[in-house]
View 1: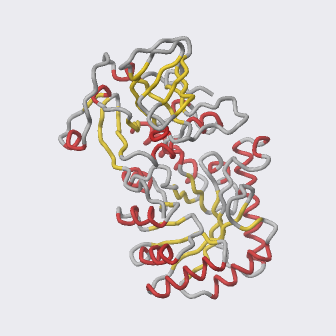
View 2: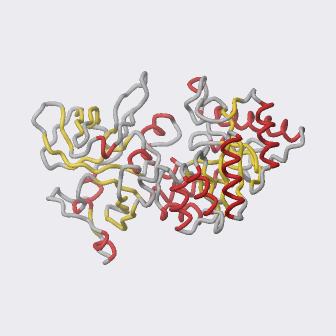
View 3: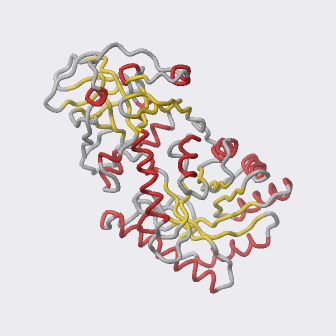
Length: 398
């Protein structure tokens, strides 16, 4: 599904000229630089849209009396995390211990590592974080739980643990029908020193069997109902399940409306992207992250080559069988990025011609994948550069 917004030059109202280079020093000196001053390729963040997305999504979840815990792996940037926390988020979800370290250092005091950590180094690192912050971890095995317990006891801290449930994604967690094993682990967690059993958690998103036959709202309500039913069954058997955590950007707002849900985790709503526009959870006007590129070759009719490839856009594209296989689409809808090598992107043109030096702005299929490859986010407002944020959790893989 093509993404259609206005073009860069229409936003800036200025004719193309050779780009300079935006630096942190430029912004620090309060110069308001225009689009044409940005060296490409550059990852741009529309601050007005980010702020609007955060406000709307947080209001939707809070309106149902449910806590929101944004997943910071989407943006990896403390400035955006601060905006989310100021807007009422109870804390952050992270994918790795190293990401949690970045955001703890930045001042977040309530962290969940939404990942089954395995390895003594990781257990020790989250235990160290628990000396200054409230830290919880997803668990799905007794081996992982015992490692966390040993590290917590050695550090003299307490870690929260949430049992991960597989509600259809098939990635991690206990299958729903494995209630006896879920109960067995829950009782083991109650006995392990240094751990507190908090509840159950799942992530299903929109990539599970039968998802295509459901709307986003139906998928969210289904996921939530499954987890509430499981939580009630565990409580009937004497287990203290306080937190029931579900959701994603697409399903979170509807899941939050189901009685018994206590927390929603979602991340992509800060930026949205081509996947969310195609999936119906966002409109073109919601997309807040784009990639600014320059045409470096225009020798072939019907196509153009830009100065950004897989090292900028990643290799994320729609799954087989989708209406499009594009990695990105220009915001005017006239160029579709169809081929990537490491440093080149080849765009198919739709009834238009481009010139060498022309600048094109693309909406990527997966914004979070783009952020994971970027050193900095160039923050713009009303056609001018307002700030530059370092992607401080970039490369945090352990």
